[in-house]
Length: 399
Ligand SMILES: Nc1nc2c(ncn2[C@@H]2O[C@H](COP(=O)(O)OP(=O)(O)OP(=O)(O)O)[C@@H](O)[C@H]2O)c(=O)[nH]1
Ligand SMILES: [Mg+2]
Image (tube, rainbow, N blue to C red):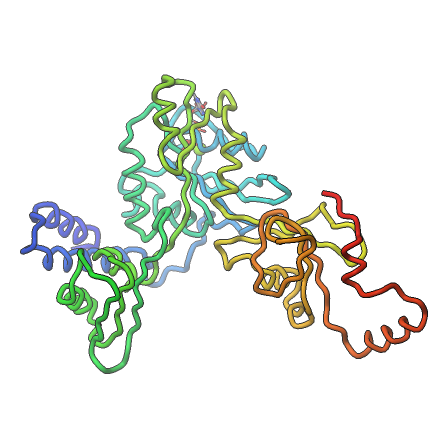
């Protein structure tokens, strides 16, 4: 029996099992089995080389956004609207057959937008080109789930289910469960909060299913069985998702109003160019990008090219900023001067752990090397201006 049949069988068994206290353990075990099979499904078949069918697109810019949706919802039209890159759009389904990249220039940052073929129910099991499409979605920083406002609400759930089946978690954070495999010592189970969805016995059973007999487990929140399986599998990807309802020109105002109030959602129309600017703003917000401008000592800040940092990918403190400019820079930094919303006063003298905010201006003050020290002494004999920080305070800064 193939993996897909086995998955179908377990799903059917789960569907016909009643949910109650008595079946809790059995269901937990089935869930673990299902997760294991789905992971197997994702592994490339033995002997085949990875990728290589034209779907791989090199990462470019400060972030990557994937357009995921059913066929003919307007993904290609949206790509053409936002990036100017032409992607064939037509009224028949499956117009787009590969991955087409475009670049959005927004807030001085470059964002890579990927147009992908439409996916259908069963994509996670390999229907259509689903598996490849989902693999691209996994490699992106944000998923734009494009939906047709005039079609059924169920589409959103189907797509979410397909993405979840391959280990994508949309708009969620990793569960607060500490899990570590050990060589010996049995299973050490602990919890800091009362658990209402899972107990020690069920936990042991799931670990048994994975043939794990030595491990440390610590629950730091009231997590579910699924959360626990996610932690054991360890290959889940937590991605932000914005639900984009396109074609609002063909639905009534009541529907538009209802859809626009859903969480993480936005309503647009590509044909009438409605709300596209709000969509860009929402994407920016969801990606958590932060622009930081550099200011050379004694000069105006360079507003032409910001350093773009991501709050998701590793954070955006001064340390990240320095590493972004050059890896070896950090060890020479004495402190930095910060202007902007993250500073309490202008300029604020900060250390490397200071967290920067969008549109901050940063000037790096380096430690003095011996050579500089000698030059400094020489300068002080020749009426050099006072300390750097004094001069900086006077430096005019126009935004
Ligand atoms: N009424 C209306 N039609 C739209 C809108 N945006 C796109 N369309 C139409 O929807 C059809 C499908 O658009 P595409 O951009 O090809 O859709 P797609 O999602 O890329 O489709 P596939 O590549 O087949 O997956 C085209 O006929 C578009 O003209 C919109 O805002 N309003
Ligand atoms: Mg298309």
